[in-house]
Length: 195
Image 1 (cartoon, helix red, strand yellow):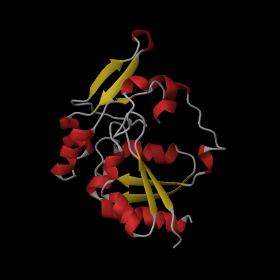
Image 2 (cartoon, helix red, strand yellow; image 1 turned 90 degrees about the vertical axis):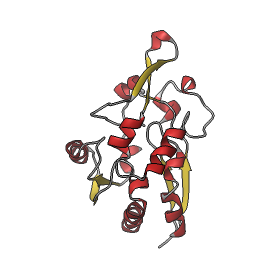
Image 3 (cartoon, one colour; image 1 turned 180 degrees about the vertical axis):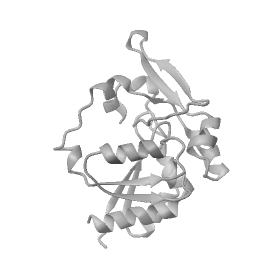
Image 4 (cartoon, helix red, strand yellow; image 1 turned 60 degrees about the vertical axis):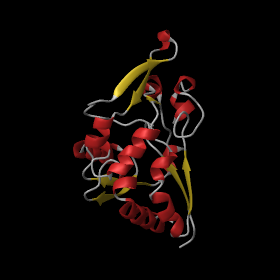
């Protein structure tokens, strides 16, 4: 198979560091892999106070149970910007419940607050000319306690252009940590199929 370039984009409060298990697996299969830090995430030097819009940053998740997540205002008081930061209980019970404890420890040491970008999402319109040209494969993580199975099914049914659905058994919200080998196999299969 021809070498491909994978660009790995982390979710809220994380950074490029969360791909440390998956990146070498894809590279050892002969692919180029770039894991990026979004603005004010990972080792990106920006502060949350410099990230006002989704265009300044670019991720958000729909979370049904908040536990010890912290929501805090930031920026000018009249602009109502809200940041989110996952707490240890949320990590252990919802995001990382099938990951090794050292991965939770790493996350707690490196996570930074992320903006909710509420105003941007209310006004965001993704065009078919840009977003619509990318073939989509949805990978269901069947033990995800953050994005419930019902919500994952809703996403699959309502996201335009989903070409295929794959499932990962016994994998939580962080497949790059709780099942990096299985995730790499799925990604390599997807690349081979949609080459």
